[in-house]
Amino acid sequence: MKNLKLEINKIKIKYNNIYKFLKGKIFFLNKKLNKKLYKYIKKIFVKYKEYKTKNKNLKELKILKKNTNPKEIIYLEINKNINYINNEIINLKKIIFILINRINNNNKIKNKAILEIRSGTGGDEACIFVKDIFRMYVMYFKNKKIKYKILNTNKSKIGYREVILYIKKEGIYEKLQYESGVHRVQRIPKTETQGRLHTSAITVAVLPKLDNIDVNIKPTDIKRYTFRSSGAGGQHVNKTESAVRLLHIPTNITVECQEERSQHKNYERAMTVLRSKIYELNIIQGKKDIEDRRRILISTGDRSKKIRTYNYPHNRVTDHRINISLYNLDKIMNGEIDQILEKLYNFYNKPKR
Image (cartoon, rainbow, N blue to C red):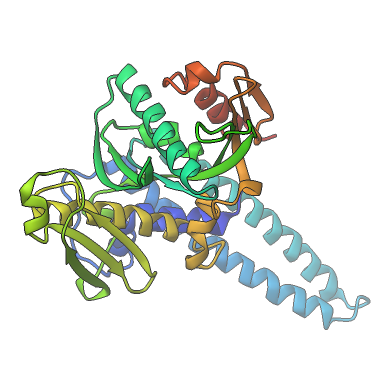
C-alpha cells in the first residue's frame, strides 16, 4: 500500500489554499471552487487527525502493556484495547485512501507541461541528439495538433545544449511524464571516419505547468539577472538586455529565458518554468531532501543511468524500464511515439494487488 504520510503531503501541496483555509491561515477561498472537492479534502484532514490520535493512543497502550504483569486482570483489558484501536487505525487508513482516490479520479491530472531537453555525456554528438529528440517531440505535437512554444534554447555549433518547451494541451503532462530520464543514443556520427559506434546521452525532464496559485514564491527569494540574448531577433537582440535569468535562493534552482524580444515576457516565461521546478521538488519532499529531486527526475546525464536507448544500426528503440524493444526507430524519430507512451502509462498505472 502507498505511504499515507506522503499521499497527505501531496494533497497539502496540490490543494494548498484549501489546507491553509482549514488551518485558519487564510480566511477566504475562490468562489469557483468545487464544493464536492472541498468536502472530500476537509474529510481527509479530519480523518487523518483522528488517525494520528489513534496511533498515539496505541503507542501509549503498548508502553502500558510492556510495564504490566501478564498475570494481572488489567493486562487482558489492555490487550483488548490494543486490538480494538489497531482495527480502527486500519479502517481509518482505508477510508482516507478511498477519499484520496475519489479526489484523484474526479480531478485527474489535466496539467499542461514544461519539457526540458539537455545534452549529457558525448560532447557534440549529445548536442546533435538533443536536436533530434527535440524534432521527435515537435513532430509528435504537430501530428496530434498540439500547440507548443519554445521558452528557451541554448545552441551549440551543430545542435543544442538545451531546449525548453511549453506544451499548451491540458492533460499532456499525464501523457509525457514518464519521458523524464536519461535517453541514450548509439550510432556512427557523420564525422566518424573509421566507422566506430559512439554512445552519447541526453536528459529529458517533464514538469507540470502550474498557475500562480499552486506555488508560493517570495519575491525576496529570487535573484533576477538580465543579459543580451543570443537567439533569433535581428538587430534588437544584441542591443538590449531582454534575456532573463532567475535564481531561486532556497533551492538554488536557476532558469533563464531569451526567446522573447521583451524582457517582461521573458521574465514571465522564466517564472513559469521556475514554478514548475519548485512544485516538483515539493512533491518529493516527504521522501527526499529538496536538493536531490532534480537528480531523481533526470539523473546526471550519465549513459549508465539510461531509461531508453536509441540504436541506429539496428533501427531499434529499447525502453529499459518496461523491457521492450521496437524495431521502428525511423518512425519513432519522426514523432510516432504513441506506442511507447501508452505502454509506459499502462505499466505505471496498472492496479496494484
